Image (cartoon, rainbow, N blue to C red; front, side, top):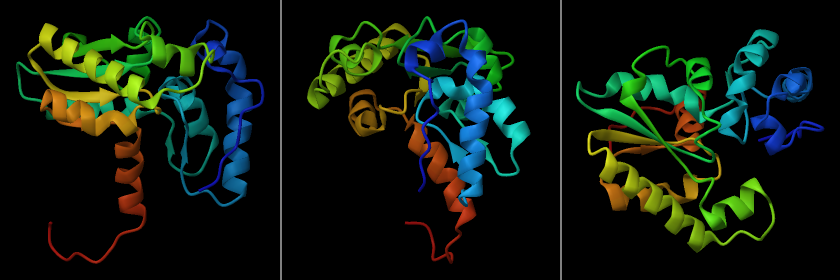
Length: 204
């Protein structure tokens, strides 16, 4: 595993109107990783979907910048009458344009979004960066957001956690909601399982 920071790219800029100005810097960081031997490129924020196509076009290795890439795959699995729920760091920022960038070109009525931008512990730890991370409090907020989303939309058949900070809380969300839950790690593990195949010994 190799990491490369993108100089100058901050979360508020990633959500802002000038995010495209950082495209070249993101590509350069990805290229540096490939020169160091990376066989795939991912990122630590779902809103990096903004750069997915540009980075993919610039590299010769697979690019998985956002867990939102799972959204069309999951939506296609769901039966008629079921919706995909997405828990995101910022619901207002997860626009239809970004969902289209992830491959959801239709069926937006089957995609329901809930944000954590007003959850105090989550927001202070990762949006405003004004306080330390309270793991227990963020887990509670994430679970409450998921439960409220399903209460409002009982037709939700799966949940996708957009934010790459949320996988530690996926198990608690699943226990509370009873639906399949996917996240950033689901995407990476799916690809790595194909990159490093193991002998088949049955399904456990």
